[in-house]
Structure formats: C-alpha cells, structure tokens
Image: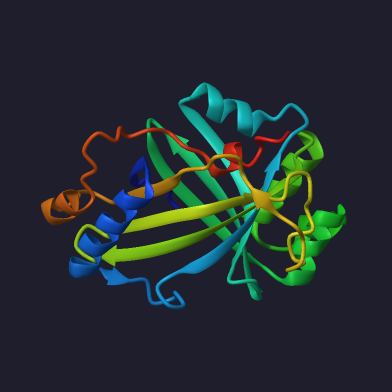
Length: 226
C-alpha cells in the first residue's frame, strides 16, 4: 500500500452563521474542488465495525492509535467507488484507498467474500482478513453534504460538512432510495487538513472565536440510534 503519509487535521463544530462567514472568506483565497457540482457534493459511506464495536469505542475513548474501514462514493454515482482505510496516530491522519466495482461492493455487503483473497489489491485483502478473523462487518450508512476548498501551498484542504444523516442499521448503500434520517442534533463540521505547514492566510480564514477544536466522528454520530 506504499509509505504511510500522515497529515495534520483540525476539526471544529460550528454553527450556520460561522459557516456563512468561513465560506465567504475561503472562497476569496481558495479554489473550489474541481469535482464538485455547484460547489458541493453528496458523500455516501458505509462504515465497518466488529461485533464489539471496536472502531466506535476507540473513537469515543480517544484511543491514540486507531483505524476504520469504509466504502465511499459521491453524488450517488456508483461508477466510482473506493474502499478506504483511515488511520490516526498522535492526532495525525492517513488514508489508503482501493477501487471497487459496484458488483464488488455489493458482494462485500452481501457477505460474498471469497473473491477478495485473490483480487490483487492489498487493502481489500486486509479487509477480508479482518472480516474473517475479527468479525468486521458493514455497520451503518453515513450521508452528508460537503463543500470542499483547496489551497495548493501546503496542500491544504478546507471542508464544510453538514446535513449528516444515518442509515441506522441499513447497509444497502448502493440503493439511492435507501432511507436515511438526520443523525440526531449533528453540528456543521469545519475540517482543515494540511501536510507540513498551514499558511497564515488560511489560518485567518478559518478562525472561529469561541469554538474549540474538538474531536468529532460522523460515524459515531450516526450510531446515535444504536
């Protein structure tokens, strides 16, 4: 899967007025992500966990080294799907991904796993191993809207995430009509990610007086109903 490259990450829980202010600021100095439609896209993810809810509990308990697996696609377009593994170590984040066809993604959801052994994609083989030996299974759908902005110096990415919805126990995530509901009283999430340095101009844009940097997990929020 190659060398692990960790990135810095800030997360702030903000309100609607904060979002309007930050959107105006970052729009003046950052580029919109070229993959958006009208400046935003819908993200749908299917998160995995084991029978003991290891990923959920490690997040809630603030375990220093943790990982989670998810399958993700954008704007309900199932022609481009990825399996992703996100890891955290000492507050820094890394991500590996591998492509999946819609048929492969559905097979994983259905528990048809034998093909994963010889697929030639190490991340998929790692998920297979953990599904076999740790009891990892698809757990819940997480939907939300994202407005992403990029700033090339420092490889900075700022995102505004809102309208977080949960599929509760549903895992039929390739079905666009799969029902989801608001994930409790979920906030708007400001995320800032960068490699080696965060330029001052971006620091100024994302200032949120009175808002503390705080850990937030969309997956954990979407488990609010069980």
